[in-house]
Image (cartoon, rainbow over all chains, first blue to last red; front, side):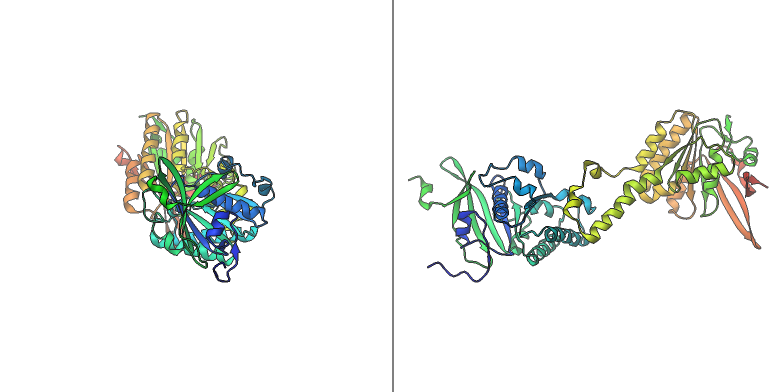
Length: 250
Length: 241
């Protein structure tokens, strides 16, 4: 009998392995920190989450902070389930954060407390206008560099999570960490205040560089805390449990 | 000494024919003292082509005053005020709307490359425009206050020095207006130190009337010329009386 995991409605990510780990999906309205060093597959996983949402009829928003979204789309994995019609129909929307900064006159290197409120409100109004149910911000770390102090970062993430949650939007905030870092986030604040943490990493095994995924924390559900090996394929992310005995090569 | 007219005949007489070519002239005065009017009368004279930089009026306002007094209108007006409005103020207005109302997807999509251009430095623009002029020229900068309000004073002084040097070497003439009693005294003193000639437009209340004066504060190397000239403003412009 599957374990009871509370009554919270689930946002089915569509990534089979991940939904299994989470006993059905991300609890709705949660804000999840997807963290990892570069090349671990964060953006691909986040994109897949949105595409599955859009395919199943949920309006999905990708806010690109680091990369120009047109360039991002050029490099997207040729997923079997991805149809560009999703973008044309407005089911899947890409927005560049620099464009929002520009519109809001936030061109200075550091944002004030008031500007943080305005930025959160602007994201909120966009989510509301488009009826967004799934959102990805890639990456939150780039936004944090404009906030500078832990107080402001805390303020921003708390307000953003609250706003998105109130609008019934289940969100993934992509966070970048240095490869050797043992922390889950660059500024150390992001991890403490999100509803969930999914850690992605690279792992060398027998001369091969494996991608791994591990759910560290997820409010509102039971979940496996085991490390999984992740494979990015045109049919989507494949996850298999990491075989513990394999590392010795015996 | 090669002299050139300031545009106010009686003032020229007082100066023994005008100011030396290559001079940078500063006109100082409180609000309503007539510095802008003085600048226009200055622009109306001389053989040189005139370039009039303004940060306070529209082109048609400048030309209307010139026409009204029968002065030359073949001057080149460079409107920094309009550029500032279009480049900075209009954008600020738009930003305040976005901040107030939030942004829609349409607003974000409407962004074109041209919107993302960097804010223009008008001080650099001013110095660059003057550097392009073919000497000898006659330049009016009305007013320095705009630059002092928007840029670091050290930057403004550096630009003034550049303009002054260019004016001097090309035997041209530059007139700048500045408000009195607005800027820090250290800045005011530095600006006055840079200028070769300083006129202050002053007035005093006597009974029910203003008595107006052109105070010749400084004429470089001709200290004997400083003095106070009572003056009046009428249809022909500023005249001394």
